[in-house]
Amino acid sequence: MQELIIAPSILSADFSRLDDEIIALEKSQANWIHIDVMDGVFVPSLSFGLPVIRSIRPLTTLPFDVHLMISNAEQYIEDYAQAGADSITIHCEAVQHLDRALQHIKDCGKKAGVALNPSTSIDFLPWVLDKLDLILIMTVNPGYAAQSYITSQQEKIRKVHSLLEQTGYKDKIMIQVDGGINNQTAILSRQAGANNLVAGSYVFSGDYAEKIKNLRVAL
Ligand code: DX5
Ligand code: ZN
Image (cartoon, rainbow, N blue to C red):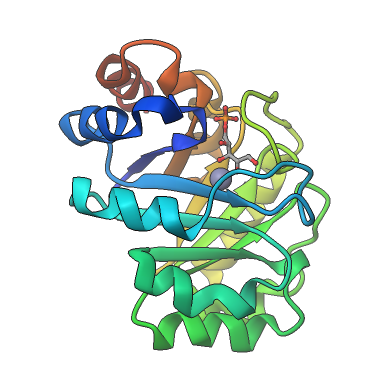
């Protein structure tokens, strides 16, 4: 069985004191730090990119889980790998040649993830399982923090979970959920088969360590 991963998203952190925020996460029971890169094209918002990742990399040993919500993500894989990403997740809707892009992430020595928007079908997944470490099922439409969890995605999580079981990839590929995760929706996602939870506004709206502990207890 895979370890349960909790990955706070620093999109909801206080950017004026990002160093303290990262140090606080380091002291909590967070497993990974989720880093949302948005380009204002693939998603409506702009967030931050390479310079910020490079500058926070020395502050923690926690793995950096980089979620690229950008068009032409394949062009930037090497840059994000060099900036300090440990895993790089690209949207299937934002790349021309998904198989090649995933192989590129692996060639850079990083964990490779593919993200699916809420309206995206899982039909393509069987053809790229051998190149994946993580499947990110978006439980909101990407672009903003603090949106509501889309419950229809539970069925998708269940379907991906059974696909991984049937194909023998259950212990090799994590199922990550991102969007609207709190101590209630964490349970729903976990019941459906997710083992990697991203949480932004929930974690950063109180005592981080306490909130992360709540998520663990919920599971
Ligand atoms: C949404 C981002 C998420 C976001 C999650 O586009 O990919 O990682 O920060 O924020 P919450 O947990 O507040 O929905
Ligand atoms: Zn994200």
